[in-house]
Length: 205
Image (cartoon, rainbow, N blue to C red; front, top):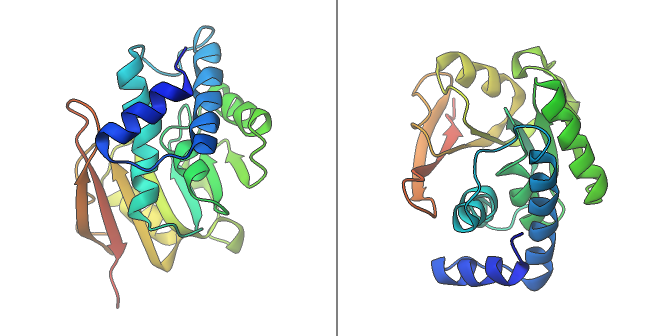
């Protein structure tokens, strides 16, 4: 089990700000994730250092990139909830919609929101293409990891995002130039071979 002290030490080592309260909530999320992982395949990560970097601190790095804002976030292909839930925990006041088509993983996400007391988190058990473009799902920030980033996805998330929205792509290739998005910056993610976090904004027309 990963202790909060290990989270705090690792965060300090890579220059990420994690309060004792946030470390405790991150610890609770990871503990729940590993308990469920014993029964169903939520993550292949087992190593403690990799778990802290990949499953927790990536989300905190993203929250710092958003400079403490409290946006409406839509996470595409949420899986086990990382990095979206840690990012939400680090962004006080944000709202989060987790979009996950696999029903068993969606069930875990609902349980995580319940156990952690995340009242501003909702789970949509469907593909992102099936979400209606209405006010209830409009997003200021879109995030994704482990999903294919192509022109179709760029167009879909662009339809669901506000005009001034940004898209955070974790660990993969940068978003394509099409679909109304353009890459503004990127930062290196913590851990070995973790890749980069890309931040793209909707093009101003």
